[in-house]
Image (cartoon, rainbow, N blue to C red):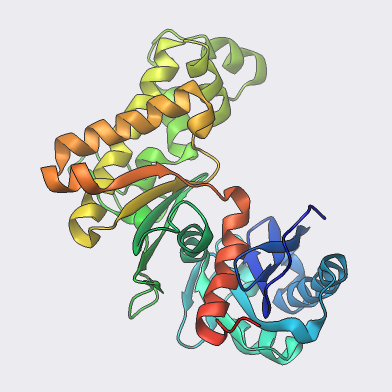
Length: 339
């Protein structure tokens, strides 16, 4: 376990369920991660098995952190897919069909003996950044999570926005294109942001243009491996490949449209960008170009007062934001009492 400051109790168990892995952490009342790790989801074994393994792993984390179960005030649980937040029920879990229509909140409460805060994984990640990450100094935050797909979260005055039908904060499904040439989103609808700025769509656009004869050093990767990845595109852009750099810039311009729409609707203090497809973030030259292109394009598209005052930046918590945010929501609902 890495060195941490003296824990502030009560503590919380944060859980971030993903399709391939589940991230779990013990988080204290100040937002400090006392111990964390991950287990394989093994979704084919069903949700009951998954919950049992989560709680078993949590016991090991408690021992590592020097915390007892009585110190845990509540559990925060973030999951992907569609859900009924009010009822605590999973509805449709992409690629995890055995978890569909499962009353996960009540089941975790029964098995753990603790109250459970249930939240969409995108809002959990956003709350983590809002609570102790890049957005910790602000009252409102919108987060775009860029990866295989595009997720997101919205936090307004300490409240995650999930909507009346638990479908709020779906930032990846903003419509940015219309007409017969609009790309089709994996959800089946045309013109959604995810169809333009996800890693999947980036690779698709690259392969289409390479097949049409555009020149790039990526051709050698495609010939050698038979595939290219978003990471390949980022690396070749960093190495000066004009084609790859153009793809990154275009992706930033598409994303700026979605960000601008959210700014016009929500007017957040800060917009943060997280997930695996940040092109290396601020530590990478191409990541810096990506961010500056977004900022410049947003300035061109929005009102001057919003362009001047809305912060757009990379997230800071990395892959920890989900379980930390889930723990933070549990704290919001059941705790916030330091001792």
